[in-house]
Each structure stands twice: as structure tokens, then as C-alpha cells.
Length: 290
Image (tube, rainbow, N blue to C red; front, top):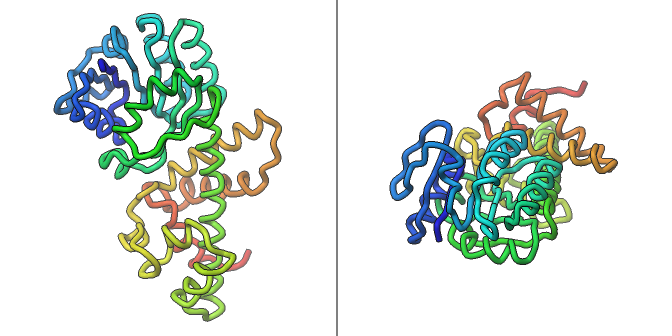
């Protein structure tokens, strides 16, 4: 396939490289002028999109996605795929999909889970929203860039799945860190707490797979001085998207809202910026009851 790839950052670059390595003809564009082995550089987003069978975007936010979409949709061929892998607000995803579909394109919103490691290894999970035909067009590419692609429903459903998942993740990580900090103050050994909780009703992904306590459970960023596997800044972005969606859909999400407030405090007013989202544990360790 002839693929245009727009947005060659930490996630986009390895994804584009994997498509090129699999034998596809990839033309890439990034405002930072990134050069990638096997990927032909384009001078503009329009140049990358022109004549492509599928265009993939991996962009920082909904505003940039809307701006790029308005430039590339007019130069794309009818029946070509427009696959947006950015994590953006549901309203932007739906607006861009509508614009693309009106121009005869096959739009898919397909945010990813798996981080930079998953992008490099080609083991991402894609949460996709769009028509059956659009999903079918993109699926062979998902198979190269990832290990799993779930068709979640119509346009916007991919973004909805991602932010609902990450709202649970943010809330659960805070609860896990609070519990470890409480255990410390009650004189309960962290390993003993892990042994109980990881096999009891409190078990969760944040406890069992990504434990925020160093030296407890499987290897995690806690064992690497909280260097980010998933940065607190990105968790804050996703929690804000969840609350924007909740506002738009008139949904009551008090825990999601509180998690957003706590991560905002951590990232913007404390030392959370650039650290893993599990670095909430040392934050709670240092705090007393207020």
C-alpha cells in the first residue's frame, strides 16, 4: 500500500518505520522535519497525503488534528482510508470523521494503548471507531503496527473506549498508591500487602502488573526511579479528555474528576512532570492527613 504518515514523534516514528519495514511505501511528514530510514520525507502534510491509499495521523491534540484534516482531506482520493491514531477529544474525532466521510473517504479513529515500547515492538492495541468498510481497509496496517485491534463501533467509539479505560487506570493508580502509603503508616510490610491484595478482591492491573512500590511485584517504572512507561503528564491529558467528554455527554464522574484534580496538582504544582504516573506513591508517602 501507499501510505502517508503525518506526525513522526515518539509514537508515530516507530509505527511508520514498522510499516516501511513490512514492505509498504511510506511517505512521512512532521513539522520537526524528522528523517526516518525507509520513509520518504514529504515537504508538507498535503504532499504526504496526496495519492495515498491510507493516511495515518499521530498528532498531539484535537485542535491540531482538525487543522491537519482540513488540509489533507481535499487532496485525498475517494475510498482512501484516513486513520487517526492520536488520542483526542471525542467531539474532534467525530467532527473530522464526518468531514472525511462527506469527502468520500473511509475514516477510522484508532487511538492506541502500549506506549513507545509497544510502538517500537509492533505490539500496540488499537481501539477503533468507524464503519465496517473503513475498519477493514485499516486492519492489515493495524496487524503490522500492533497485536490487537478492536472495532468498538461508529466514529468516536475508539476515543470513547480509550478515555474510559484510562479514567479507570488513573483512579485505580491513585487508590493503589494511597493504600501503600496507608500500609506504611500502619506498619504493614509492602510485600505482605502485595501478597494479600494481588490475590484478593483489591487486585487490579495497577497492583498486579504495574505495582507502584519499588521491589514489589513484577518489574515496573517504580524499579527504575519512576522514569516514565506512561508519563503522569499523559495521564493528566487523558483524564482531562475524559472529563471534557463527561461534560459534553452530561455524565456524572466524580472519581474521574478528582483523579484529574490530583494529577493536575502533581504535574503542574509538584514534581510529577516527566515522571511515571505511578510516582504518585512517593507523593502520598510524604504527605500527612490534611
